[in-house]
Amino acid sequence: MSIDTDTARRVAKLARIKVEDQALPALADEFNTILGFIEQLNEVDIDGIAPMTSVSPMQLKRREDQVTDGNQQDKILSNAPDAREGFFAVPKVVE
Amino acid sequence: MSELNSLNIADARDKLRAGDISARELTQACLQAVDQSGALNAFVHHTPELALAQAAAADERLTRQDAPDMCGIPLGIKDLFCTKGVPSQAGSAILKGFRPEYESTVSQNLFDDGAIMLGKLNMDEFAMGSSNETSTYGNAVNPWRRGNDTTELTPGGSSGGSAAAVASDLCLAATGTDTGGSIRQPAAFTGIVGVKPTYGRCSRWGVVAFASSLDQAGPMTKSVRDSAIMLKSMCSHDPKDSTSANIPVPDFEAALSGDIKGKKIGIPREYRMDGMPEEIEQLWADGTAMMKSAGAEIIDISLPHTKYALPAYYVIAPAEASSNLARYDGVRFGHRAKLAAGDGITEMYEKTRAEGFGHEVQRRVMIGTYVLSAGFYDAYYNRARRVRALIKKDFDDVFDDGIDAILTPATPSAAFGLGEMTNADPIQMYLNDVFTVTVNLAGLPGVAVPVGIDKQGLPLGLQLIGRPWQEGDLLNHAYVLEQAAGFVSKPAKWW
Image 1 (cartoon, rainbow over the protein chains, first blue to last red):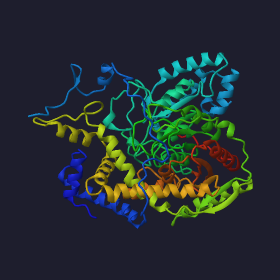
Image 2 (cartoon, each protein chain N blue to C red):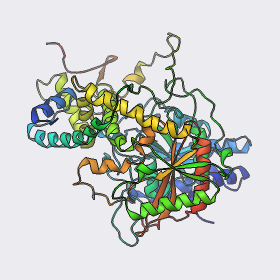
Image 3 (cartoon, chains in turn yellow, brown):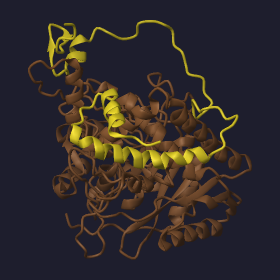
Image 4 (cartoon, each protein chain N blue to C red):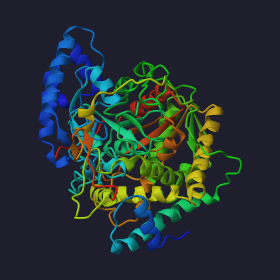
């Protein structure tokens, strides 16, 4: 499997990271180096082996569906780059 | 008497309880050492006022005669831990200015026991790196040097600041985190002890997430006993982390009997890598001989899927990272890019993440995005998770056969020079974790112990791997190795 610049561009878009066009070939090369290393996994016989979901055999705990926290709008907004009138502010989303 | 900051936790605890020293004196000695350590770039945010207030509270508690072991002990805290009101950036520009409104469970546990925070420690950005060279704060520098050669060496990574700070006696101990070796590799590079506990021992709540199924916090200390003391304080069952284990935390220090007679130590043949330096091979043989003369039985074992651990890790960790790091979007916290006229929300995301994330983080997020994308999820991500199950089964099998602990090298080399790997391909850097990453994939406890000095005068460590939840027994093995190795060297002060 080889990644070309179009695939690198698509991956950058999916990851929401702006990559300039001139940087794409080098990025594709790096991906190919890493994916080439990962290809070794194809040597392993994985028939009948389930994908691991948890390293220790534990049941994820459930708690009562009750409100346990809240009423801290100021704290939640305190680190926002742009907060106005109790909201996070972002560029216009709907045209 | 030597400087108070050069004390270890166990000795400081005894002196504090006896009233020979005060937490205030101890803290001031550390703060002074930190102030003079700019060349190491280990501490990146300083909290002297908080430290002195915590010291005053610790002194008051000590006079009441019921102080916990960690009471009055000055620590450095890795920047990955969210600390209330104190900058917590995970070594990243994207979290510049972020001051959490909450405290991580691990740091809270330490503070509840009276421990003192001197400041935040340098690290690779989002814990992605093995040399501390991906940090937005610049490189942390290893206090060790190759004899009289003044080349600056890496303290390892990602917990490079923690390792440098402990090795140079800026603090008595530090917190670290370990996703693929980020506690054990820097500990080995700086001649200190570092423990990655069993997955689920330490709460991950409030620790900036890298790869959630692999991340664990742990202590980085000057001795095995110190690790036992500090680990007990860090561990707890935490309802705020659904993977936190609801099992009792034993007294790990009480497990340090120094007796491993009849214990079975496994030596995995697959860890004998091609091209492994002769000195590492010799160190491993020396460590094996030490365990044997302590009365342990040495057994040749096989962990057949070892060579697939790194490739599996470089699917699973980036996949989880791409998901975890999706939250850095310039909306709720941290950096937001300056937008051009007409830019919408997508441009905001893309520019913010391009400016805020460094190169290695961008690369891993994109690799993770790729292996999780439609059409590749099964071929990469699910295949890696199935290989991971086999790697864990390798360990289950040897423990079922009665092995008590596994002895391996901690790293494939001693500390290398900062910048020496710049032109290598990323895989070369990833190979630093070749001996440690299996432990994260299998969720096991592991410890790096300093055992020797190489020809250049740099420390080398060995790793012991234990059964799940048996950190006490593991640390007892490490204690025996530490006593037998008698590693007491310290870096000569040049900073």
